[in-house]
Length: 240
Image (cartoon, rainbow, N blue to C red):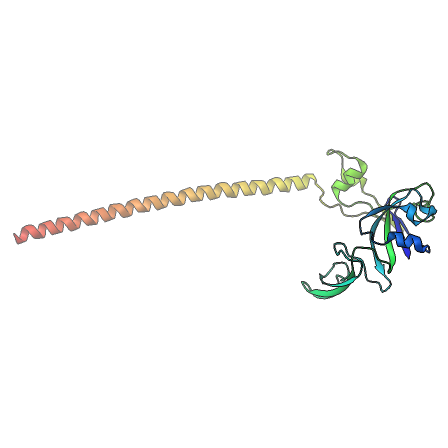
C-alpha cells in the first residue's frame, strides 16, 4: 500500500511505500475522516496523528464519504462528485459510476493522509521542508486578516505581488470597499428612498382622484334621480 501524506502547514506532500502487511491490516476497517496514531504504521511515524482523507483501489476507483461499505458500489452521481469528473456529461446530467465505500479494505492501493499532529522525527520531504505559497489572498477581508489590518488601513497597499518576466503582477481585490463604492451605495439607497417616496405620493394622488371621481359620479347620479322623480311627479299631476 502507498501512503500519500500531506502536511498543510508547510504545503508539502509525498508518497511513501508501506510494505509491512501487519501495518496494512491495522488500517483495515478505518473510515474516511477518522484520525489514528501513526504508531500503528511503524516506528518511523511515532508521535504522529493522521487523518484519512480518501484513497483508491488498484483499479483507481476512489473512496467516497458517506458510503458505509468496504467494497465497490455503483451510484447515480452528478457531475463534479467524487468518481464523476465535472467536464464529462451535460449540465444536470447524472450517471451511474463505480466508487468505493468510505471504509478501508484490504484491497486499497493508495491512501491519502493528512498530518494532524507532528511527531518527534522529521519525515523527509514533508515536515523538513517548506513550500511557500505562490499566490496571496484576493478577498479584502482575507488580506485584512492576514496582515491584521483595521478599517482605516488601505488594503490596496498590502496586496502580495509576484515577479513575472521582469514585471510584477497583483490580483484584483475582491469585495473591496472604497470611497467610490460607498458613494455608489449611498446613491442606490437615495434612489431607492426617492422611488419609495414618489410611489407613496403617486398612490395618495391616485386614491384622491378616485375619491373625487366617485363623489362626482354620486352627485350626478343623485341629480339624475332627482330629475327623474320631478318628471314623474309632473307627468302624474298633468294626468290628474
